[in-house]
Image (tube, rainbow, N blue to C red; front, top):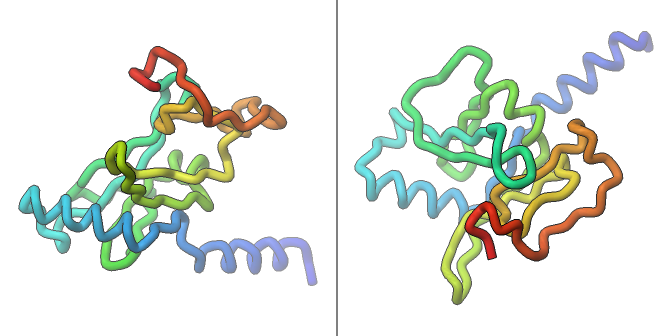
Length: 149
């Protein structure tokens, strides 16, 4: 098999897998939030993105959006429509989004295999691609600048 054919087969195999995995709890909570905001799930989707900033260099973001943009990846997770732009997809590929409810309150948690480490706040991270390769993963403590712990 030629190398190009092998690359195409691998790309097709990857394309059939969702970009992000959502736990049922995360999807349920997000759909509940949409209902509370009177957002029609046929018109709106959850947009998950990565932006520059945060205490570790990059930060996660989620918002409800009614516009699919050129280059977006669109998929459905437990009845929740999800959009990810092509730049964020590089940083988020293979990540898992969960909703965690504890005595201290509830919140979304993103497990990202592309993260080389982050702050204890859980909202920002360093990418392995941005020179963080080999850095020890540190999710303990806080940075002080994020209003963290």
